[in-house]
Amino acid sequence: PLKAGIAIIALGFMSKYDSPLTIMCCGLKYFKRHKFRSEAIVEFSPFRVPRELAQMYLVDKRKACSTLLEMLELSMRDVMLIAPSYKELENILMARKIFIKDETSLSDEEINKVHKQ
Image (cartoon, rainbow, N blue to C red; front, side):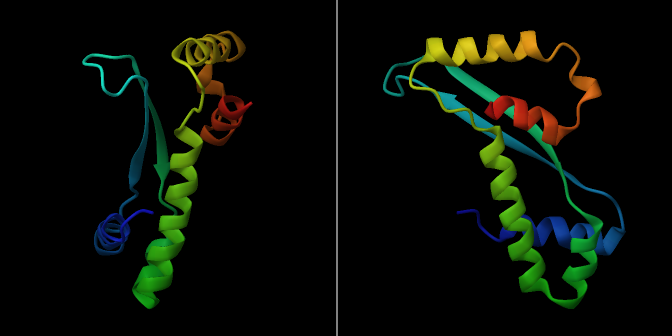
């Protein structure tokens, strides 16, 4: 589970400065963790914090923080690719490159949906 600090900092910033905020979710997948310089895959995905949560933070901090933490956890789970071996993970990434020729035309949710398929 995520700690509340990230939600407090993000929502506090947004409510104080009335500025949009993007949090970068990171997924790390590595194999042979006991071996030095083993293969690793790092995936990133931007998560834009909704402005409604900053308004909710001014009224009910606990509810706003818990809502943001739930949304962040879902976004982070979307970034993690699960495969039993490094070769299978490489194949998944290659298929994704073939299937999605131009990632700029898709939204973040659509890209994550393709990753899961």
